[in-house]
Amino acid sequence: MFSLRAKFVILLIVYFAGFATAIYMLAPTAQPAVGGEQTASVAGGFDQGQFVQSLNSGLHKAVAVTKAAAKDAGSYIRQKLDETNRNSK
Image 1 (cartoon, helix red, strand yellow):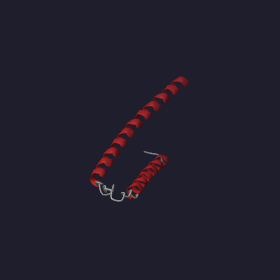
Image 2 (spheres, one colour):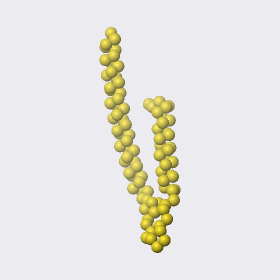
Image 3 (cartoon, helix red, strand yellow):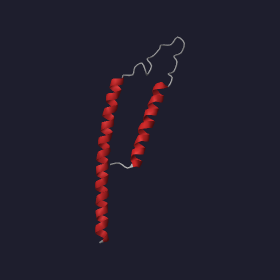
Image 4 (spheres, rainbow, N blue to C red):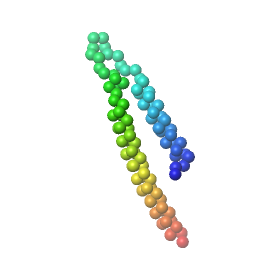
């Protein structure tokens, strides 16, 4: 369905998104000033279940938009090719 080139690009995007997320989650937080209040760290306030649901929802929306755009692009290209074929006859 997809060419090897498209699969490779998608694989790279997913890989680097995961890598960037890992770096963000493992990055050290700023230390509070002496005598200052401590705030909750990013990792401490992270709700994995909510993140998974949000990510899943976002990916499904992205796939739906991509499918619609591919269908529209295919129709447009087919229309232009048909016009070109009719004009060349």
